[in-house]
Image (cartoon, rainbow, N blue to C red; front, side):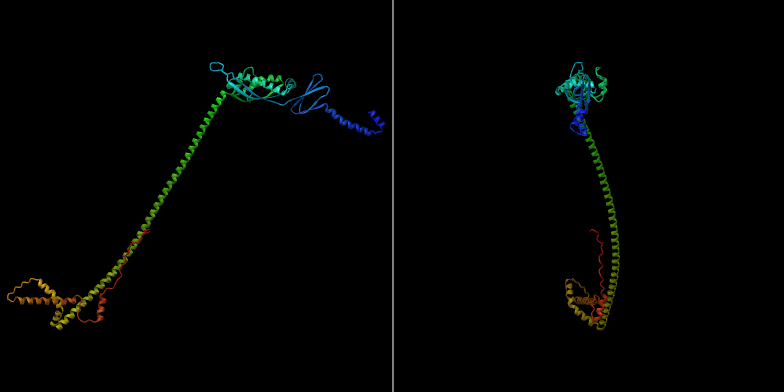
Length: 450
């Protein structure tokens, strides 16, 4: 330092600049020197640093490892877990019913995970015995070790034990050479427990430990047959369950349909009963209407009959009065005619009678002659004058007939003699009965709808 200051004095440099230069050099040079003593250890790696004299220090990443370039020797090994896939095929230790060996060929697919131990001794062992080899050779060592141990474990077990997952059964059937502490684990398979127990010492010799061993699948013809049988049984059970469910569903559907049918039948029956009640009510209403109409018709007929009877009584009374008046007038007229004839006969005497006889003689003479011609008269006369007596008798008959005919005329309504015209019209008007209107025919009014 004194020399530097002396040289600075010789170069005519100020001391301050010399001091600054020294500080900068120290700041740049000291980290370089420290970096030569500290080494970065990445995550998933372990740094082994061996000192002069055989002492070894381990540094796990991530971190820094202290190394001295001249006095130490260092190496890095991975600390990550190693995954190994296993395919083990061998025969089981099965026997038949007679005790003879009857092995069954099985195939076991598994995966194992191993990693380096935690202690410094195991780390040194793994670094010297395992990680000193190449990666391919490392995998081959682990596969051979685990496969051979797995085959030995398969030879110790029966076929059914490979598929048994009960921890209690595993512990009870475990060989005495196997640690029962491992057998109490309920999360591992028996084959995995045997393999772990058998490989633990050998892996420790390599500085490794078991993390886990997973038995993926155990295959065999017997297992496949059992699986097929189990699958068929499961399928049969599923079919039975499905058929049972379908049957129950069908029964429920039929029950629902039956309930709907019963409800529909009840509804139709109720509708029919309501229709019958409505029809009965309508029939009663029609009957009541018919009774009412019959009563109205009967009342109308009775009223009409009473009116017709009263009208007929009035008409009959009027007709009777008219007929009586006519008869009285005719009788009076005939009496008047007879009286007139009698007066004429009293006044004219035999002359009037003779005149009428002469007027009627042309009418009755042919009839008298026909009657006399058809008559067979026998006259018996005691005096011998038969023709004369016969003629007198005929004359008397003719006179009698003429007189009867003469007097019959006024009685039949033929009145001879002059009468005033106004008197004849009055007699005819009084004799003719007043015309009465004919009673109307009454009948029952038509019923509705006819």
